[in-house]
Image (cartoon, rainbow, N blue to C red; front, top):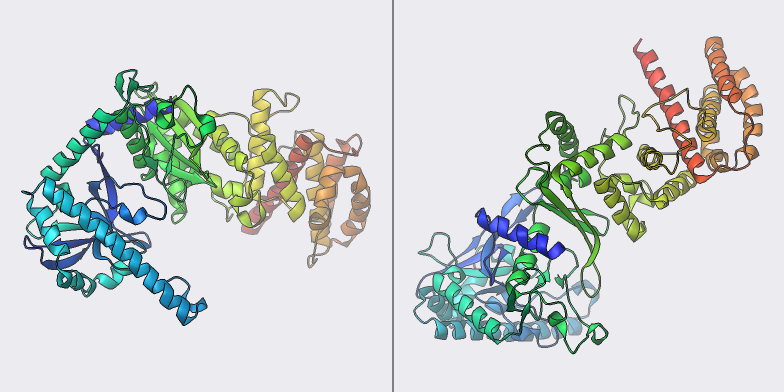
Amino acid sequence: MILHALTQYYQRMASLGGDVAPEGFEYKELPFIIVIDEQGRFVQLEDTRETQGKKKVGRKFLVPKGLGRSGAKSYEVSNILWDHYGYVLGVAKEVDGVAKKDPEQIASEVAKNQTLADNQHHSFIKVVDELHHAISDDVGVLAVKRFLANADEINKVVQSDNWAECFKIKGCNLSFRLVSEVRDLVCQSKSVQAYLSSQKQETSTAGQAGICLVTGQKTTIARLHNAIKGVNAKPSPFTSVNLSAFESYGKQQGYIFPVGEQAMFEYTTALNMLLDSDNRFRVGDVTAVCWAQKPTPLETKVSILINGIKDNPNAHIDEVKGLYRSLYKGVYKEPNAKDKFYVLGLSPNSARIVVRFWHETTVAALSENIATWYDDLQMVRGENSPYPPFMPLPRLLGNLVLDGKLENLPPDLIASVTQSVLNNRPLSVGLLQLALRRNKAEQKITHGRACLIKAYLNRAVRCGSLSHIKELDMSLDKSREDIGYLLGRLFAVLEKIQEEANPNLNATIGERYFGSASSTPISVFGTLIRLSKHHLAKIGNIGRRVNLEKLQQEIIAKINQFPSHLNINQQGLFSIGYYHQKQDFYVKSTDADKE
C-alpha cells in the first residue's frame, strides 16, 4: 500500500525529530524576509540565500500551509503572513517579452499587472486583519498590520539595497520577522499555530465521517487531498476524482476513496518531503523517490547510484565502488536485511500525478540488485577511455536516441528499465531494438550501447529466454561460437585490415556496411572478404599482415555458412562481438606502444 508506506515514513520522521511540518504548516523557501519592529517600521530586507553549486537558494522556513488558487478570481486567496511580493507589497510583476511589444501593449500590460497586484495586496491585508481580530494579543501580527497600513514603510522595502535581487526572482516569496526575534518568523508564533489548529478542528468537525482506508479507523474523511509538488509543472493531486464518470454510489470527490484527514496530511507531507530531498532522482519524465522502513544510508544513495550527479560525475563512481565495498563487508545485510525498502516512480499528467511503478523490497535485496546491474554493464574499456567505469542510467539511455535527448525515448521504456534495475529482472526487448536501430543509424556501436546490449542478453540468459547461449564476458571471448558473435568479430577484423592498409581513409567498411552486415550478413561478407585480400597485400609489415590474416581465417573456420538474416538476439551478439574485437585490438596496440 503506497499511502500506508508514506504515512509510516511521516511518522518515522516525526518520531526522530526531523524537519517534519506539523498539520496546517509546510516548509517553504523564502529568499527574503522583511524585518520590522513592533511599531511596524521597516528595518531591513534580509537575504536568506546561500550558494549551492552554481546558484543561490533561499532558506526554508516553517509557514502556514499555502492555499490552492486558480481561476479568474485567484487573487482573492491569500496565504497567511507570507506570499509573493504582489500580495505582500502590492508590487506588480514585470511585463514579459517587452522587446517584441509596442508601447501601447506594454502600457496596457503594466496597468493590468498593477491592478492584479493591488487586488492581491488587498486580499493579503484582509487576511492579516482577520488574523489580528482573532488573536489581537499577538505582537507580531499587530506589527505586520501596522506595517501594511503605512505606505511609506512599504516603499522603504522597494527602495532597500536588497530589493533589486528580490525582484529578479519571479514570484519571490516573502514573510515577516520582528527585529527582536533572532530566528522565528511572525507566522511561527504559538498563538498563530494555536489559531490554525482551532480552524482545522472546526473544519474537521463539519466534515463527513467514515472508515479510513489507510488506518482502518473511523475518522473525518478528507474531501480534497493536498497537492504534490515536484512532478508536474504545477502542484497536482496524487489522488483525486475530477470527473462525474468516476463517481459512484452517490459519493463525490474524496468520499469515493475514503482517506482520513490526518492520514491524508501525513502521506502528502511525506511525499512532498521526499520529492524535495536527496531521496529523489529523475530519469527522463519519471521522477522516483525512495525510502526505507528504518533509517539506512541507502535511502539517500539510491538516487546517486542510479541517476548520478550531473555536476560531479566522480561522486557516482565513488558511490558505486562504495556499494561494492559495503556488500563485501555485509553493511546492508544484518541487521538491515529484512527492513523494507520502497521505490515509487511518478510521471506528470494533465489532471493528476501518474504512478509509473511501485517497488517494495528489502534493503539487502535492493543493494544486491543495484550491484548486479553494474555487474551486467561491465564492459572492457581502454586505459584512457573517456567513458567512466560505471555509467548512470540517464547517460546510458541517452545512447539510445539522437543527441542523447531522453524526451525522445518511449515513455514506458524509462520506467521499464528502472524497474528492471531495481528488481533484477530481464530488460525490455524494446531497449534492444532501440540500441540496434541506433547502431544502424550511426553505423557504429558506442560504449553505452554495448553495455546495455550486454546487460539485456545476460539477463535474458539468466531468466531462461535465451537458454541456448551462455552469458557474455566483459571482454573478448575467443571460445564463443555464436554465429552473431563470430560475424561481429570477423567484421571488426576486416575493418582493421582495411584501416592498416589505408590509414587515411575517409570512411571505413564499418561506417558503410555495419547495418547490413549485422542484419543480412550474406549480402556483404562475400564482397568484404574478397576486398580484404587486396587490403592485406597493401600492409607493409609482414608480421602484422600474417597475424591479421591468421585471425581472419581462424574466425571464418568456425562459420559453417553466412546466414541470410540474423534475428534480433544474434544482432545483439554481433554488436558485442564487434565491440569486443575492436577493444582487443586497441588494448594490444596500447600495450605495444608501452613496450
